Image 1 (cartoon, rainbow, N blue to C red):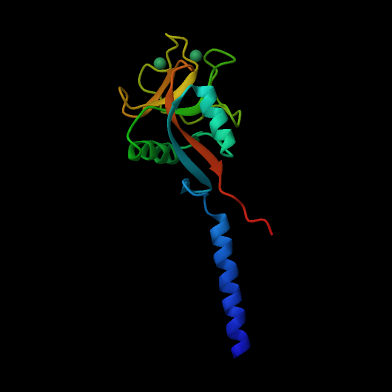
Image 2: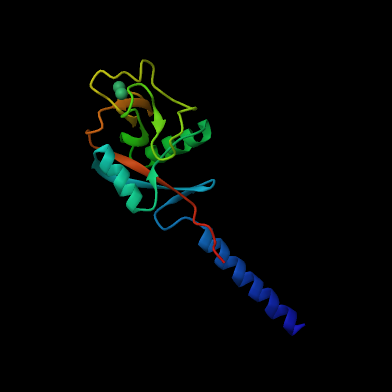
Length: 157
Ligand SMILES: [Ca+2]
Ligand SMILES: [Ca+2]
């Protein structure tokens, strides 16, 4: 009886460590298999990408309405400022792709009339000043806050 008790405690401690290791790093918020971090500093788009890379991730990429809603709500909770998202058409005008994964934008939430490359706009932002968080193409050298994304750490035994 005593033996079984200590085995159970051991299993419980092991599972607790497992859960702990599998969560997001401090400061990140968990959504499904991913961790999201809000960077409250304005940077040009390429600096946002390198900052997210330094944090083990990339500027957030959105593949579904659910992810879009999560990221939009996350930005609203953090002050409803314009944020960079991780897509660009830098290499070929009008050919948008998610920058880290290289995948095309299957799900989009462009504001009506966007993207419109009127000021040489090759980077994607979530626009709260005019478009209530819908998407807009914006010049990459503008400075905005941004959301980093990284996969949840996996337990390595
Ligand atoms: Ca463009
Ligand atoms: Ca635009």
